[in-house]
Structure formats: structure tokens, C-alpha cells
Image (tube, rainbow, N blue to C red):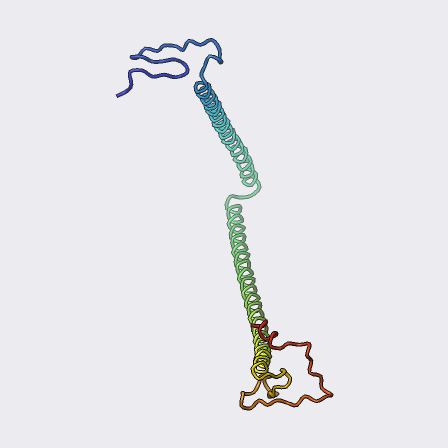
Length: 217
């Protein structure tokens, strides 16, 4: 059920009777009414702009259709004049035969060009695939080389750290622990032996290999 009265900035409707708002200037309206007036003005402006745009669009489409119609009429006229000229210069049968021969030749040439274009595109696609395959193989080879180099570096570092740890446990300097010459690692504890430190060989007291081993962990 609708309310008995409705109010807006323009006035009030009471029991179906409209009573105009008693205002003399814009300053007499409340802030809410001013906002409502502004919203209505903006909406009216938007509606008018939309109507104008639609009208202009209709006019452009109508003009475009008219131009297309006139162009078609002109083209039809030119085609008709050309047909009449051909009819005057040649017999109808010869003209039709020549036209059919020309159309067949054009269609055949177009099919040939299309086939050549498709073949060329396929060849380029195959070349791209082959190039991508070679690049991927090269990338894999580079990755394998980097991984192998990293593994060798890791093994060498682990061997050095193991040597330093064994020397720490036995109270020796790392160069005094016997090791084999194949993998750079220290020998088993039972096989390790201390080398005598001669007067001519420095003991290198400035390097703490135990501390080096701890830092590398």
C-alpha cells in the first residue's frame, strides 16, 4: 500500500493532491534537497547526452546506408555501361567464354598461392620447433655441466672439512693427517698416523683448522 503522502524537494503529495514547496531561492532548500536537485540535474544531463549520442548514431548509420546505396547505384550503372560496351564489341557467346576462362584461371592461381602459403607456414613452424628443440638440448647440457661441477666442488669441500675434523680429534694439524691421493679424503682413524714435525717444516700456528671446520658447517 502506497503512503498517504510523498515528499520531494519540489513539494508534497498528500492524498493525491500535490502541494508545491514554498521556497523562493535555492538557499531555502535543505542540504539533502540540494543534493537531490544536483543528482536530478546530473541524471537529466546524462540522459540528454545519451539521447543525443543515440540520435547522432542513428543519423550516421542512416547517412552510411544512403552513401552505400548511392555507391551501389553508381557501380551498377558503370557495370551496365561496361556490359553494353562488351556487347557492342563482341558477341555474347565469346564474351561469356572469355569471362569463364578468366575466372577459372584466377581461381586456379589463387588455390596455388594458398597451397604455397600453407606449405611455407608449415616449414616455418617445423623450423621453429627444431630450433626450440636444439635450444632445450643445449640448456640441458649446460645444466648437467653446472651440476657436475657443483658436485665436484661439494665433494672437495666435504673432503677438506673431514680432514680438518679428523685432525681436530687427533690433536694434529690437517697437513699431518695421512690421506690417499685419489679423492682428497682422510683415511680411517686406524690408518691415520702423525707425521713428525721437523724444524724445517713450519707448524703454521696462525691457522686454526678446527675453527675453519666449525665455520664451514
